[in-house]
Amino acid sequence: MHISQPLHHVVGRDIVLDEPLAGLRDAERAVVACLIMFHRKKVRPDLEPAFLRLGRRNQVLVLRLAALLRIADGLDYSQNQMTQIADWEGDSDDQRSTLYISGAGAEENARRAAKKADLWQDVGFGKMQIVALEHADMPPAPEATPEPDESSHALAREDVGGYRVSVAASDGLAVMGRRLLRSYFRQMLQEERGVRSDDSVEPIHQMRVATRRLRAILQIIRIVAPEREVRYFRRELQQLARALAPVRDADVFLEAVQDYATNRPEPAAPELGMLLDALHTDRDAAYARALAYLDSERHARFKHDFATFMTDPGEGWQPAVRVRDAAGSIIWQHYEGLRAYEERIDLETALEPQIETLHETRIAGKRLRYVLEMFGDVNDMATPVERVLKPLVATQEYLGSLQDIAVATHYIAALEAQHGTLHTDVASYQGYRQSAQAGLLEEFPRRWSRLLSEPYRRDLAQVLVLL
Image 1 (cartoon, rainbow, N blue to C red):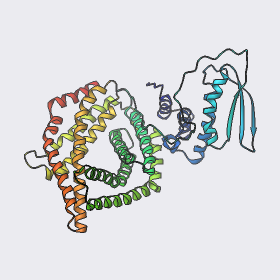
Image 2 (cartoon, rainbow, N blue to C red; image 1 turned 180 degrees about the horizontal axis):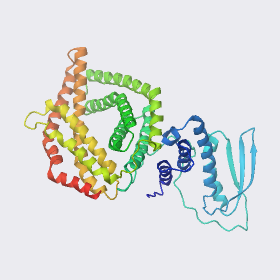
Image 3 (cartoon, rainbow, N blue to C red; image 1 turned 90 degrees about the vertical axis):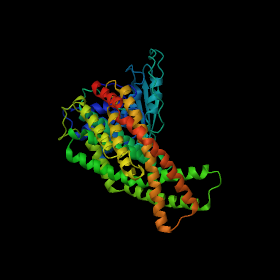
Image 4 (cartoon, one colour; image 1 turned 135 degrees about the horizontal axis):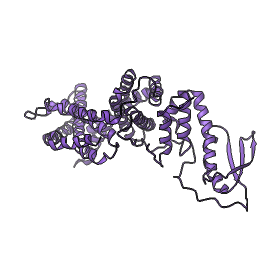
């Protein structure tokens, strides 16, 4: 069993969700999982799959129980179990209450419990004051183990993203898959907040990355997961990514045009400003469509259903298949999927007409990358996995630059078809991008041969040996 002190609440949550608990129904087990998750640090119910799968009544129950549990946890911050509740006073008129405690370490425990009473107030119980009574004859409490500082508001809106899932080769593939789904689903939900606020272009990008990783995980665990559900969720994630794609394409193109306009030797002509205006208009329209999708009943239903899927190891799952039973063949099959493009890419002819094939190659490379990253934390595989990831990621990013140029070329061609001959400044920008494309294409044979080489395959085989 993997124990992580900083993430012990996550580990505990995962144990409850992945192991049968006698006498508890699925929803009740999800309630327990939420209480474990919410007793520590900031409470983020809208990011927790176990919470999202619950009905409204159980969600209210979870928050109320968590409010009590957080105070109780603070009352034993000194971990000596000597705190006693001496008295309690409540005022129903102004919704204020005071809890009096005594015992060794009561003063420190009172401070901690008062800090963790944030959720008590957030769920509508009113303000809680906790007072430590003085007892001169009480022995001093042992020094408490410090914890990271937490926000004064329990229902916080900040987060650090997904967390790493540590597994062993002997763990079940289904268990690892569900834990990875919970991690990246949490990250996707966090990025959705940023997409809605639209303060930065990065959340759109990272949310799309999260959807791709989730689809990759579903594809990997399809041999141990219910087939119909896997197909459904992969389809929904693909639809979500498509809803966000036009916004991301516009963001990338806008950044490139703005960079070109800023770094030109002479000021950009007004006509280039017209290109920027067109991009901003299209971006605004694409963003409005993306928001409409995020606000749709379809998306809300998907999030609830997906949360249930990854927190309920019910019928259709195959728990007996271990990571080491399948990881090797999964990794090598994805490499074979990438290497198959060796027959489709003709290095003896011009590569520009083969841009679409290069884009498909990039997608195959992404799939291999996600698989390697998924299994990268198994045992002590970080170093050998990093050795094969480094050239793969570099090639993927390089091919991404080519794809960005292809998107820009198609956009400008569409503008020309709509408005007729474009201003020479736009044509100059188009020539600039095409020149950059030619330079990038010259690099492809060298990068591609590295991924097809015998040393690379040997490094990849070493990863399989460690399983």
